[in-house]
Image (tube, rainbow, N blue to C red; front, top):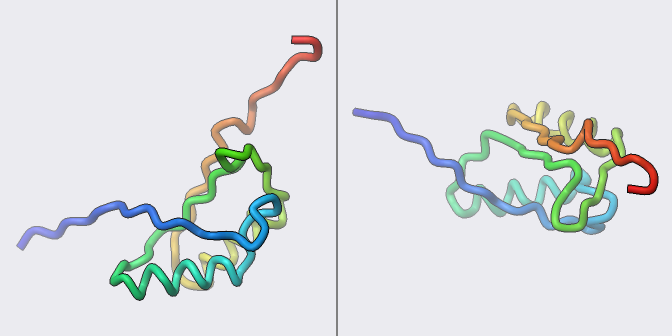
Length: 90
């Protein structure tokens, strides 16, 4: 038999989107995903987060990675704009 996998995005609804996810937000999203029969294998953190452009504090990202590791969930951190700079007056 051939094994297949599928990527299914599942949102994390945050208590405060401006500060990023906390462990309670992550736990709730994980629980809801599992209740739908999904096997969560990856946590994707997009920083800055769209559509608001919210930039998470380093501790929020570190705590999210720690949360995922404790549950044996891989973490991908998308920091596409990390090296973007803007010159003054442009």
